[in-house]
Image (tube, rainbow, N blue to C red):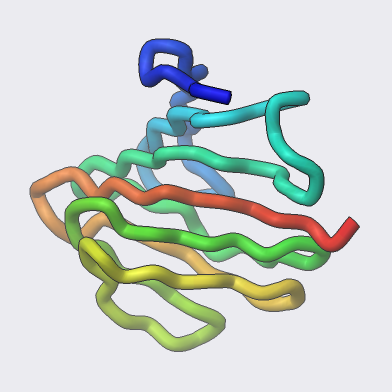
Length: 116
């Protein structure tokens, strides 16, 4: 299956999980096109100061891969910088948050996988 860039569904989420500003989600695959055990596969773009606030993953895990830019991530209480080429995972029962701390956009591929 080939998914063309022009076929991506775009969604702007304001104050995601109580975060600041808006984040652009370009869903690379969504709905019934997602494979089993996959809840989300999206390209996320954060402008300066925009964030996804602290949230828990109880029944799933979320992977982030930073494509470009630099951000600040709270990984279950450990706050650090994350930049292009870095990856992070939030396992079931843990929490995370992320914020763009630079003028340049922060672009992340996000994948949520479930246990069911």
